Amino acid sequence: MAGGRATAVQLAETALALARDPAVPETVVLDGMDAVVAAAFESACVKLQSAGALITRIAIPEFTEMASLHARRTLANAEAWAWHRTLLTERGAEYDPRVNGRIRAGGKMGAADYIDLIQARKRWITRVEMRIAGFDALIFPTVPVLAPPIAELQSCEEAYAAANGLILRNPTLINFLDGCALSLPCHAKGEPPVGLTLAGAGGRDREILALGLAVEQIIHAER
Image (tube, rainbow, N blue to C red):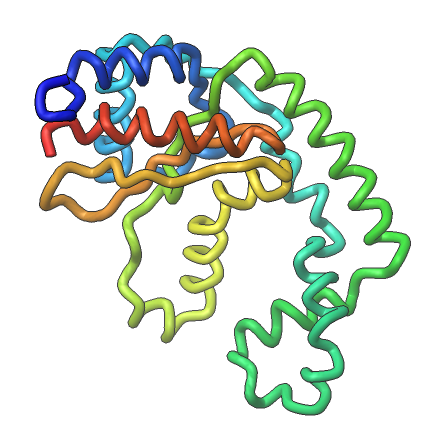
């Protein structure tokens, strides 16, 4: 390599070797995308395909189960309540009111509900891992919308709750999977920030990180 720098062709070959078979989940993670995020994501997919990646669009119906699984609150709610409950009693006024409310929601989850959710999560992970086992990684927008203006979220609880849920949605799926993921900027230079998530099942951290290095070279070859 002249000057110790890889050529665009060599970088493309590296990306192809590491990510020949990524999958785009079409269930949930693409819902509600705004036009800017959709354009940046599709552009990244086109660049990967041009480098030789064989992108498959798949359904992961398990992703639609999150609301029913968490009907009695989330693991994060319960575990945060276990840690903070004494502090909230003694110094609750020092907490952000919205954070305070979300932690206190965990106090409404009983021990049996918590155990049931842990067991349901294990079964859910097994089903999702079986569904994605044949692919090198999942790729999807990290957040489906551009960052919203802060002022309107501060003044309206409904707007805040809707935006907060939408922004947390995609990362939450991989967290619940106990998977591994990274987010790469995939927007064009000068455009608003958009993230591209590369994710895999638990224990695949080294592979996903290596994949990220290669994919980054492809989607930003012009920089």
